[in-house]
Every structure is written in structure tokens, then in C-alpha cells.
Length: 370
Image (cartoon, rainbow, N blue to C red; front, top):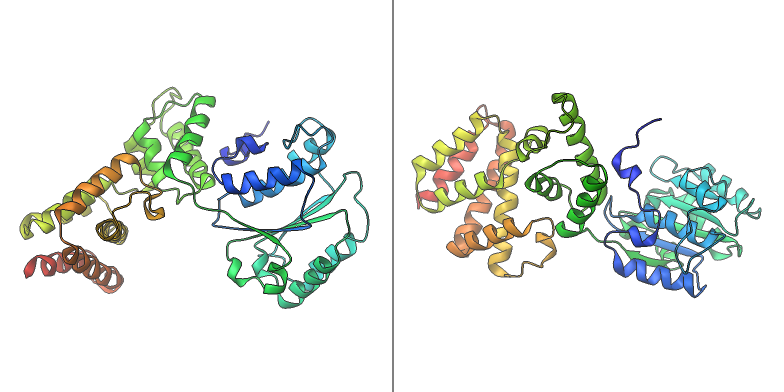
């Protein structure tokens, strides 16, 4: 039996298993309960935010033979066919690789016929903003006079690129990046079910690098598990924070905060020495300056708008938020702005520098110099 990767193994099979997107789930489940479905939905949001998962859940619920309120039973033939990817009446098209008019013409031919065995024929078109002009116009004609048995679900990461005549015929839902706590709760449930021993700080690192997407976090966790099993024959060994840093090349936030402290303390010698010390340990200068810029950006935004519920801090754990707050209060806004500007310039210069860390050293000296 083939072992499924985590994001497929733990893909939600019911609406109650979804993490986040409560505003979307509440509206859609109410429509299912009240039998007030739209013929076309537009799901917009970042990659890994659950658009395709919710689309499949909707397809399953409206075709379930034993619907429990708004939840699919996951036991009837229709549910099992959708879960296993064998449902003939669920058509999924990736517009990123199938942009042509021929693909939409095939869809148009298929829509002329009633569902083979389900109540509704559901068409999920992923990355729908990438449809060619001719394909989009052909889709528009279908949306203008859709048959009663057809439901279209368009998913996109760039809704602003959708032609307005298609968007106006859809019920639109905007998916958001998830908070660190939402992703953390999902990962904790997975490691519990999988009986994985892992430090909480290691999980937090994965969460902070998931860019607000559960799928990204699950893929990263899979990588860490594979690395751990290959590197140690004892599967019972606890996965440590250092393991995650090593595998994913993650820069410890404490290194950034210490470097920033030394810079704003005007300690040029110690700051440059510390910079070279951490680079000597194997940190890529390009990744380091990227992390510094991101940290200074967050510090600046907190300085001008001290609200830790701001979406920019969504990926940060409570501990890191506390550190960011404490450090931001130490420094003046112009200092942070100047440092951010100079490190941004250094980031652009690294690729052309014969000594990769030289632009960073010069940035530190210029920040401290005045």
C-alpha cells in the first residue's frame, strides 16, 4: 500500500475538518442547508488556502446520497467516488496547463449531457484567470445559460485578472492566509495521530515558514519526517528544532534580533564580527539579508501601527511577536527606516559583489556611522 503524503492523507473530508476560512464555510453550508445554490462560484485567494478543498467538499455535499445537514456522509457511492478521485461527474481542469479553446469546447460538449449518476455535474476550473481569451469567452457563454444540473467553481490566485463578465456571474468568496495558531492546531492534530515525537519549537518553525497555508506546512512537515527517518534508524527519536533548521535552511530569529541590537547599540565591531560569525556557520548571505529585511519591515509597521493582530504578523508565533514588540519599542522610527532602506540596497548588491557579505558589512557601518 502506497503511503500518502500528509497534505493528501489529512485533506478535510467534511466542512467541520476545515481549518480557518469560517466566513466562506458558514455561507456555503447555509446555502447547502437551504438548497439555495449558485450555478457559479469564484474562489479567490493565495495558494494552499483551501480553495480546491472547499470546492470538492461542495461538490460532495450537493451530490451526497445521505446528507447530514450540510455535511457529506463520506459513505455513499457518490462521496466515495469523489474521495478517491473516480467521480465521472466531477470534472477538474487546470487552466494553467489547459488554456486552449479546445479544452473548453470539450467541456461545452460534456455539459450538454446530464450527469451519469450524480445529481449535479460539477466543473472545477483551477487558476481560471489563465484561460485564453477565446476559452474565457466560450466559458462565458456556458455561464450565461447554464443547465440546471451544472455547477461551476472557478478558483484563482489572481481574481483581478478574471474578465469582469465572468466575475459578475459568480458568487465570489475570498480566501485568506491562515494565522499561526490555526496552522499550529492542524499540525498538532497530525503529529498526534501519526504518533510523531517533535519539539513544539520545531513545529513553530514550520508554521512560521508556511506562508499562511496549511498545505505548505504539511509539505514541510513531510520533508522533516523523511529527513528524520533517513538520518536516524530509530523512528522513536524526537525531532528537534535544530533538525528543522538544518533541513529547511531556516535562519533563527534570535540571530536576527541579536544583530539588530548590536547595530542600534552603535557597536560596529561586534556587529560586523557577529555577522561574519553566523555566515561562517553556513548561512547564505542572500537568505540572511532577506530575513533581516522582513524583520525590519515588521518592526517598522509595528512602530507606526502597534497592532499585533495586523495580517502582516499572522505567521508569527506569540513568542516571536513578544520579541518583535520589545525590540521595536527600543528604537526610533527613523532608525528602523534607515536600516531597512540600507539593507534593501545591500540585498540588491549581493549578487554582484565578489564578497557576498561585503554589502551587508557596508550597510551596518553606514547605519552606525552617523
